[in-house]
Each structure stands twice: as structure tokens, then as C-alpha cells.
Image (cartoon, rainbow, N blue to C red; front, side, top):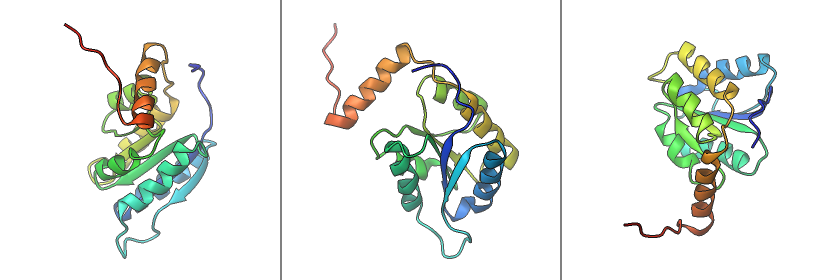
Length: 164
């Protein structure tokens, strides 16, 4: 994969009832930066929405290549992450700081950013999304690991040999 940075992305962004306001503000910011954004999730906190439903909608589109990246927001980011990672081709992680945002892209080619609406400030969420979107995948030795993950997705295991 090339280290050339893409300047705009097709992004699916979703939240449960915990992340409605964060999703709306982040969507607006992404649009202002030239990205195409599709929103998934409720418009109001009542009734509460089950995060697996929203994670599935976003992850399905990312895994199918219909969008370039996904962003999921719930109370902690953890539940969304667990649900999203059930889809082939998805690499999702809860990101809490600049280092994890950077390394998740450089080493893991993370394609779904999972964020906490309750533990991160709006300013931090915006910063993490910016770092994550601007950071390229390094490829090289890291591609071998992504290929191993793809093998696990396809056959349910990775063949390894014993070492002494």
C-alpha cells in the first residue's frame, strides 16, 4: 500500500444514544474538511439505541469497501469496537490518545475509529479524528501482519509452526 495520503474520504459515522451530539459535531467538522459523510444513529437519546445495530451498519459498509473509513461513538468506544470487529475486513479499535491514533494507522491500517463520548472531551475527539485521518499506513513489515489477520478471517485460524 502506498504511503501517499488521501486528502478526502468517504466516511460512515455512527453513534448510539451516548454519542449523538459528538457525532453531529464531528460530522459537521468532517464535511467542512471536504470528506463525504454518511450518518448512522438516533437523532435523540430516547429511546436508547443498541450499539451493535449502529456498529453493524458502519462496519458492513467499511468491510464491503463502500466507504473508506468508519467512526463509531458510544459511551466508552469498547462495545462498538467489539461489534465492528465481527465483520471481515474491519480493523477497529477504541482510541484514547494521540499515540494510539497514530500507531493504529501506521501499524494496523485501522479503518474504524472507536471513540468514547463519555471519557473524552470534544476537543480531544476532534484531535484524535484529525490525527487518525491524516496518518498513513506504513505498509512494509506491517502488511505481513494484516495478511495474517485476513487469513484468520477467511479460515478461522492462522497456521503456525512450532519453534524451539
